[in-house]
Length: 433
Ligand code: NAD
Image (cartoon, rainbow, N blue to C red; front, top):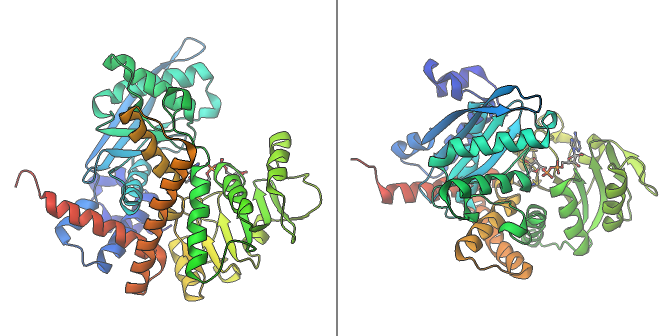
């Protein structure tokens, strides 16, 4: 991710310093690169580089000691050309307007490349959720939802969980919005508990999507997931599900890791057993019958595929040369930097970018919204089959573009996304003229 200040000045006037965040600069660089590949109309490009609407709200909250603390919250509605705004809500101490804007731009790009009928949005509150009691978190969520009331809704903007928020947060948002509008409106948010209109399959959707994409990528290089060796960095929601579904398909998961370190077994792990160990012990530290290695060593193992499913910025120009995996499927957001992607592409490593590889979560969120609107719920097989069809199609479009333009899959996926947005924006035109 670039934090080059001269680039930032090129992108923003002094009056736009609130937008100046490395995440947004990075998104703008990617949009510019993709625009070149498809000869994007400069008028469209200009519109794609600014959010349509940004909302800042103050959120007074009654704390447990009866004092009132005022928090700041945001919702950035980046683009609605393809449909209602869609994107998560983040509770974290570093949340600021520029970061939320960058994340909203990435949601626009991801929703477009996945072929979903959504624009892009993102929201957040600057707070440390680990320091809030359950009641304080509920009060914060309900007031934030109330302040955003006129701007969100099943046909306007549909939030979802992100860092620091979960299905309970979504249940409070759904209830607040429903109370204020007078009737139950499950379609206002996704990632809800199943009992109030959530979808089956949502919890494992991102990991399953990673595996569907990896299966397709193996097919493209004339290999199979069955018998392939795989290393998985991060064993949380995305990593543990990806490891489990790959294991179920006959892959040999030779290494997994969490924040405490990595474990290696050349014969492949029994993943359900590793999951049970984590449930009991919370960490991989004492897992038996294996070799303990570092996270850096895991990243450099000579495996058929590496799934980085932990954090951003794990593979950079500093360690890209040491990577021996033949393929990388990005379960996390931004684990391989743009510079590292170019190095890896040049040495023949196939990198499947996050905007496709971890799109399973937003695709099943889309299914949740469709089911809520229809008030008709699907079984898990139907959900997983539909997910496979959508995510594989997105992969194929990116793959074809990468061959046509002779670029890496990240640049190609961005180009597919911008191309779809451009076509729709040209058809809709500008209002008023
Ligand atoms: P999580 O908190 O459930 O899991 C994160 C895992 O990474 C944990 O096992 C943690 O121990 C491990 N970890 C943390 N720091 C580490 C380090 N330095 N080295 C190795 N492991 C480390 O989070 P998650 O929901 O699985 O999300 C992981 C990534 O996937 C994030 O980038 C997130 O934005 C992205 N993502 C998640 C979803 C989703 O549906 N959960 C969807 C799209 C993208």
